[in-house]
Image (cartoon, rainbow, N blue to C red; front, side, top):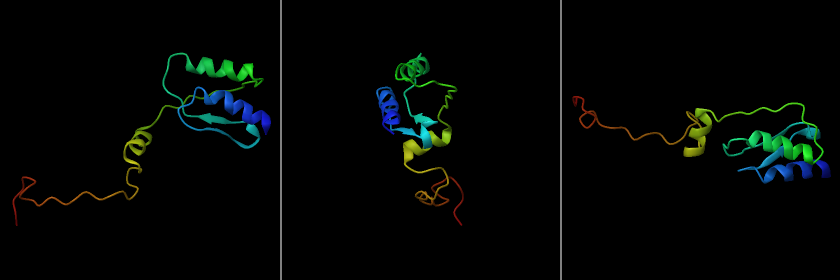
Length: 95
């Protein structure tokens, strides 16, 4: 476990959020800012700390990820319902 903590600690300098290691330290995930050459820097930092990288995946945030970050809830997740607008105010005919 000490090795995994060392690896995740090395990545923390690059991360903009938590660095998580999966079971056995075979998968490490981190949220990082968008920066030219960052993937290379991360791989080199892991190599320097003794990690032999066999695969790397870069995942860009989806629109759902961005919406969740901005609003604090997922789209259609039961967030606050919009206030109803009377038809006369919405440009329609009032009944």
